[in-house]
Amino acid sequence: MPIYNKLVRDSIPQEIEEAGKKFTTRVLDQQEYIKELKKKSFEELEEYVNTTNQEDALEELADILEIIHSLAEYHGVSIDKLEEIRQRKAAKRGGFKDKIFLIEVEG
Image (tube, rainbow, N blue to C red):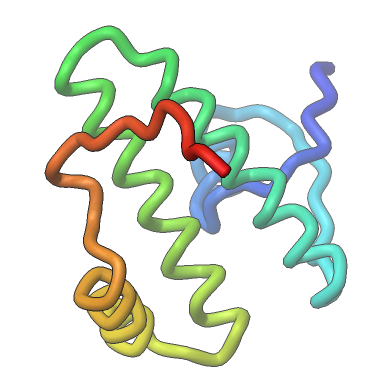
């Protein structure tokens, strides 16, 4: 039996059960949950980086967005509040749309 030891989406156990397979899970405490969410964010980002087509890229971006929603909820803010913070930062420092690549700064 493969061992995963990772955070999975809420419906995964049901899908495994429907496939007629046996599995073991447990519910994480808050400290473990945030640690695993952070690990999952790196996993999903790496999967996005390794995509080679538009469809896969969008699927992985959706996974990253799901992680962001969960992290925002963990930190006690709505996704709308997080968006407000993003907009405030973008208004102050800009976004990344201009594709500026900083080479060096003298002095």
